[in-house]
Image 1 (tube, rainbow, N blue to C red):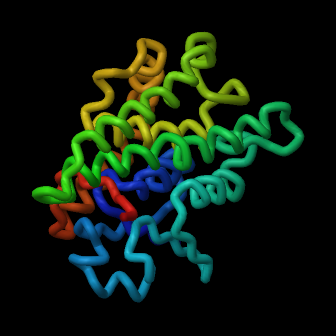
Image 2 (image 1 turned 180 degrees about the horizontal axis):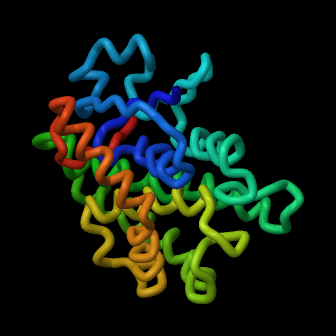
Length: 222
């Protein structure tokens, strides 16, 4: 059985979405945010105290994009993943990691310095600068998304899940109001996917059943 430790709308939403796309059974264990402070026993599972934590038959993983890549390769060959023999294999890997390293990282600074720091430690200028950084890098997708529905290989892949989570985080931060038309249309398309909606419903139901607050609290790594 696959077990996924998750906080509402944190990075762990990526593997949750992938699991729903693939359709394999899993156990979802919800945690309050931040788990390293509010669920100290979780440190025995992931000493970093961050989510996700993924386990299956002795395999343990803690990086959201790596888990998506693993799931796509193991359970969705030719569908969510892109084979090394396909011409878009390089583009697939690039967009897979672009979603985290380039798009999610600057948003964690926006989140930290507008929501999690207090008093004089809040830095509105830092938040504004990194918000602009995120939007500038997001705009590099415009030419591609203006002519195709998904990022690569002519189909929805784990790369779209990776980038899609960055758009979900941007929505929580109010940055979606500054999306370009091409990105907005792409984001609407992703949200319309049944598996995305199922993942949203799964986290809400699990949070309610396990007594965890459902207010979105994306994971940061200060």
